[in-house]
Image (cartoon, rainbow, N blue to C red):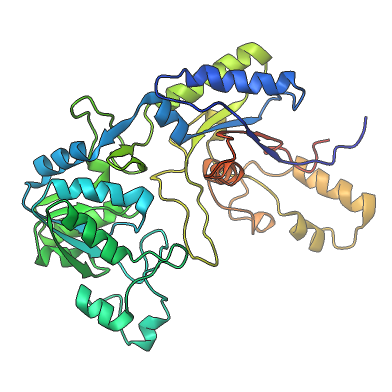
Length: 398
């Protein structure tokens, strides 16, 4: 038998254009089985099949309108003045939601963090903070003060001036707008006691700080559109978090019932192939662009649903540590066999041990979801399903 050279392989699988009401489970299974019949790969135990969250939500018809959002915001926050704290600067992710918020209020105090939003979209070069002697931990700036100090905001990739763009969006809905720059969530309470926290991963802390500062009505984006309005879609767990612009007045929400979806696919694939394939739904990957400084994860989680075999974190030895330390005097086949023996005999839990230092301390779903996001991309590749083989192999597997 020839020696196996390949390790982990990640394949994007091309599928049809999925529309609301399509049987996505059957489409996914048919796509995998067609690839097998074409001899593109053979299904093996511990393979991973991943489906992008956007196509799951689309098949479910999980959409709402900005009118639905406005109605929900008006009922929950009173319909008068509201403070919006820490939104990300994104035309796709937030701008469409902001239009809905403006329809549910008479005045919006929009508090932006600076020099960047939560996921790393910069309003200006952070080196300007030192040059202009501005303390981002304490200084509160009006829009006029901000632009006098730093100039007009300009996104490094898109060139968008999100400050002006967001203000015009709000005013375009007949709502008054005032923009504030502060990294302290409690600042907004000086303007209004009705607050919508729009951060993603820090939202629980922000809500806690708002309550401590005296805010009276406190909601997050995860509290808006948690139930259907006028027959709309909704997401009970995440509300508007994870949503994307669908049309000029429609939002696609994060998908529902992902756990049932992945488990049903796993079961049917097992019935067809006799192999236990792990299945997950994935959204944004969790990685940071070192040049643009943008952290990709604008979804509330990388994976809203995954089968049991994807729980936990990697339990791996660092091969270069073994080669440079325990087996520094070995070479060739002797080194190879010594390393293989260490892998076979490794502890079930290596956390905190030097031989695992430098291995990636992240959850499997976050690692694999990031791999899937990079494989499928967000453009015109047409591969909403990703099939991964060899991810759980190690150096001992032939």
